[in-house]
Image (cartoon, rainbow, N blue to C red; front, side):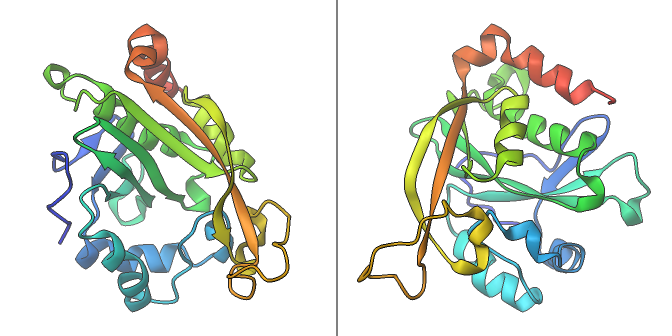
Length: 232
């Protein structure tokens, strides 16, 4: 079942005309994720995956986030496709705080066949809108939505900027990084004697971007809605 302890209320579905997000349910979506996302390159820039089977996904990833009140995941469906071929990816909220009224959009993995389509813009847009719209408009009324990505992941940073996120800076050496995901690293090997020299000899610089409530009210909402409505 989907986790029920997330710090914000989550409806049964968030949807636009072309994309639907539903809470990730391990009894339904794990098999789909492991089967559809076997391409290891999909995980080059993120600190999790790939997963060889359902058991590894549950043990190494799901069990680490399911009890974290600041994290939740969604399965992404393309509503323009037949139901049996509509599963397009995953996306989620993380580093969320009800006390500070903030969240971050992450866990973004979209299958190659759905990339460069309406799917990513609508999935991201739905989470931005739900976070920043006021409660009377069906949202959470948060103050800040963050997007973090490896600074080497040009496509992810570009996606965020296209959706209206403003870059705030680069966090240097933000994560210890393995050689198996060298594409996501900053290209610099750590110094001799580093405590994690053998297991994580690389580092990841992280680009941090955000949309805040005042951006939302001064044009970002209209921009996001326009991006979601685009057909090209």
